[in-house]
Amino acid sequence: LNNTPTPQIEKNLKNLAETILQPLREKLGKPIVINSGYRSPAVNAAVGGSATSAHRFGHAVDLIVPSYAGGDVKKLCQYIVKFLKDNNIAFDQVIYEFDAWVHIGIKSGNNKQRGQVITINRKGTFNGIV
Image (cartoon, rainbow, N blue to C red; front, side, top):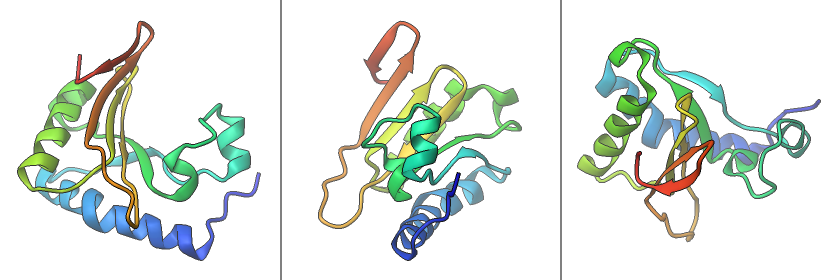
Protein backbone atom coordinates (compact mmCIF):
# COMPACT_ATOMS: atom_id res chain seq x y z
CA LEU A 1 0.00 0.00 0.00
CA ASN A 2 1.25 3.46 -0.86
CA ASN A 3 2.06 5.39 2.32
CA THR A 4 3.82 8.39 0.79
CA PRO A 5 2.92 11.63 2.57
CA THR A 6 1.97 14.75 0.64
CA PRO A 7 4.08 17.90 1.10
CA GLN A 8 1.47 19.24 3.56
CA ILE A 9 1.54 16.03 5.58
CA GLU A 10 5.36 16.18 5.61
CA LYS A 11 5.03 19.69 7.02
CA ASN A 12 2.63 18.41 9.68
CA LEU A 13 5.04 15.60 10.62
CA LYS A 14 7.90 18.06 10.91
CA ASN A 15 5.80 20.28 13.17
CA LEU A 16 4.93 17.32 15.41
CA ALA A 17 8.60 16.31 15.60
CA GLU A 18 9.82 19.83 16.37
CA THR A 19 7.13 20.82 18.88
CA ILE A 20 6.74 17.57 20.82
CA LEU A 21 8.89 14.62 19.85
CA GLN A 22 12.34 16.19 19.81
CA PRO A 23 11.85 18.20 23.02
CA LEU A 24 10.51 15.04 24.69
CA ARG A 25 13.46 12.96 23.46
CA GLU A 26 15.91 15.58 24.71
CA LYS A 27 14.25 15.69 28.12
CA LEU A 28 14.10 11.90 28.41
CA GLY A 29 17.64 11.46 27.13
CA LYS A 30 16.52 8.15 25.67
CA PRO A 31 15.55 6.90 22.21
CA ILE A 32 11.88 7.05 21.27
CA VAL A 33 10.45 4.20 19.20
CA ILE A 34 7.59 5.26 16.94
CA ASN A 35 5.34 2.29 16.20
CA SER A 36 2.92 4.22 14.02
CA GLY A 37 3.18 7.67 12.49
CA TYR A 38 1.64 8.82 9.23
CA ARG A 39 -0.89 6.41 7.77
CA SER A 40 -2.35 6.96 4.32
CA PRO A 41 -6.11 6.35 4.08
CA ALA A 42 -5.46 2.86 2.65
CA VAL A 43 -2.94 1.94 5.36
CA ASN A 44 -5.17 3.42 8.05
CA ALA A 45 -8.11 1.32 6.84
CA ALA A 46 -5.93 -1.80 6.67
CA VAL A 47 -4.90 -1.44 10.32
CA GLY A 48 -8.46 -0.65 11.46
CA GLY A 49 -7.81 3.01 12.27
CA SER A 50 -10.58 5.55 12.68
CA ALA A 51 -11.64 7.36 9.50
CA THR A 52 -10.87 10.64 11.30
CA SER A 53 -7.55 9.48 12.75
CA ALA A 54 -4.95 12.20 13.25
CA HIS A 55 -2.43 9.70 11.87
CA ARG A 56 -3.97 10.27 8.41
CA PHE A 57 -2.86 13.91 8.50
CA GLY A 58 0.58 13.51 10.06
CA HIS A 59 -0.68 14.87 13.37
CA ALA A 60 -0.17 11.77 15.54
CA VAL A 61 2.27 9.07 16.56
CA ASP A 62 2.09 5.97 18.69
CA LEU A 63 5.30 5.45 20.62
CA ILE A 64 7.15 3.61 23.33
CA VAL A 65 10.44 4.20 25.11
CA PRO A 66 11.72 0.75 26.08
CA SER A 67 14.57 2.13 28.19
CA TYR A 68 12.30 4.39 30.31
CA ALA A 69 11.06 2.90 33.61
CA GLY A 70 11.80 -0.61 32.43
CA GLY A 71 9.43 -0.19 29.51
CA ASP A 72 6.45 0.66 31.76
CA VAL A 73 4.10 2.38 29.30
CA LYS A 74 1.80 3.74 32.01
CA LYS A 75 4.70 5.51 33.72
CA LEU A 76 5.84 6.80 30.33
CA CYS A 77 2.39 8.18 29.62
CA GLN A 78 2.28 9.91 33.01
CA TYR A 79 5.71 11.39 32.31
CA ILE A 80 4.68 12.65 28.87
CA VAL A 81 1.53 14.34 30.17
CA LYS A 82 3.49 16.05 32.96
CA PHE A 83 6.24 17.09 30.51
CA LEU A 84 3.73 18.62 28.07
CA LYS A 85 1.82 20.47 30.80
CA ASP A 86 4.94 21.65 32.68
CA ASN A 87 6.36 23.06 29.43
CA ASN A 88 3.09 24.57 28.19
CA ILE A 89 3.21 22.45 25.04
CA ALA A 90 -0.26 22.32 23.51
CA PHE A 91 -1.55 18.89 22.51
CA ASP A 92 -4.84 17.50 21.38
CA GLN A 93 -4.69 14.01 22.86
CA VAL A 94 -2.41 11.78 24.87
CA ILE A 95 -3.87 8.28 24.97
CA TYR A 96 -2.59 5.40 27.08
CA GLU A 97 -3.58 2.53 24.79
CA PHE A 98 -3.92 -1.11 25.85
CA ASP A 99 -0.90 -0.83 28.19
CA ALA A 100 1.17 -1.13 25.02
CA TRP A 101 1.89 2.37 23.64
CA VAL A 102 1.25 6.08 24.03
CA HIS A 103 -0.62 7.98 21.32
CA ILE A 104 0.25 11.67 21.03
CA GLY A 105 -1.87 13.81 18.73
CA ILE A 106 -1.97 17.48 17.83
CA LYS A 107 -4.11 19.67 15.60
CA SER A 108 -2.95 22.36 13.23
CA GLY A 109 -4.19 25.73 12.15
CA ASN A 110 -7.03 27.26 14.12
CA ASN A 111 -8.25 23.95 15.49
CA LYS A 112 -8.33 24.12 19.26
CA GLN A 113 -6.06 21.68 21.07
CA ARG A 114 -8.30 19.78 23.48
CA GLY A 115 -5.59 18.65 25.91
CA GLN A 116 -7.37 15.32 26.40
CA VAL A 117 -5.75 12.60 28.48
CA ILE A 118 -7.45 9.26 27.90
CA THR A 119 -6.98 5.58 28.62
CA ILE A 120 -8.27 2.99 26.15
CA ASN A 121 -8.19 -0.65 27.13
CA ARG A 122 -10.31 -3.81 26.83
CA LYS A 123 -12.74 -2.44 29.43
CA GLY A 124 -13.46 0.76 27.48
CA THR A 125 -12.40 4.39 27.23
CA PHE A 126 -11.71 6.44 30.35
CA ASN A 127 -10.67 9.98 31.15
CA GLY A 128 -7.20 10.23 32.62
CA ILE A 129 -4.56 7.55 32.95
CA VAL A 130 -6.06 4.54 34.69
